[in-house]
Amino acid sequence: MNPILMEVPTQLETERLILRAPLRSGDGEIVNQAIKASYQELKAWLPFAQTLPAVEETEINLREAHINFLKRENFRFLIFHKVSNDFIGTTSLQSIDWDIPKCEIGYWINTKFSGQGYMTEAVKKLTEFGMEQLQFKRIEIRCESTNTRSRSIPEKLGFSLEGILKNDDLSADGTRLTDTCVYAKTS
Image (tube, rainbow, N blue to C red; front, side):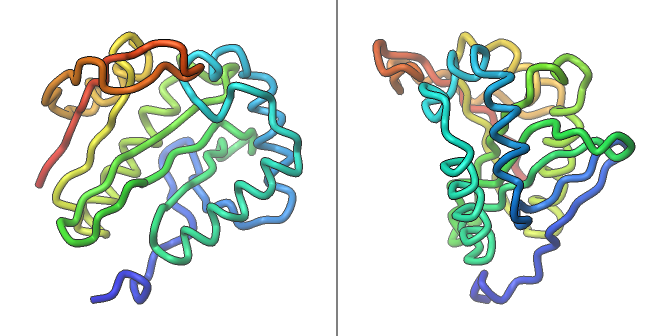
């Protein structure tokens, strides 16, 4: 079946969180505030956070993510707390290969919510969604080997560390080579 015909929910729920597709006008403002509040932490690990984006740039990015969601090329979800409605971060099924089928999970968290298990909860839900509903046979999480906080998520969720790729990528700021951990869960 052509993936464009798949019914994909625009919202997922966990015990504490709501994961929803970035489809509302104005999401850019909320996400941009979190990027600014978390800038120093994000800058260390993510190429997109090397400069602070304008609200308009973030809004454009989210609208493009929505288009990619509709095209079934990438499923990005914004994470909100169920009770307070605070924006927690984002997680996505990305680098999708429908022929296998497989994908990667990416994520980042608003610094003020880190250390509370929210991202682990969100990634667990996204993994279940990918395996059970989308029928992915392989889901990977890739992260820099020195990013211990990011590495702890796949480790807590039972992903297998398949290897560490030496000199595989550039640091977020592009100044040095880094090693990439490849974690995977297969069905």
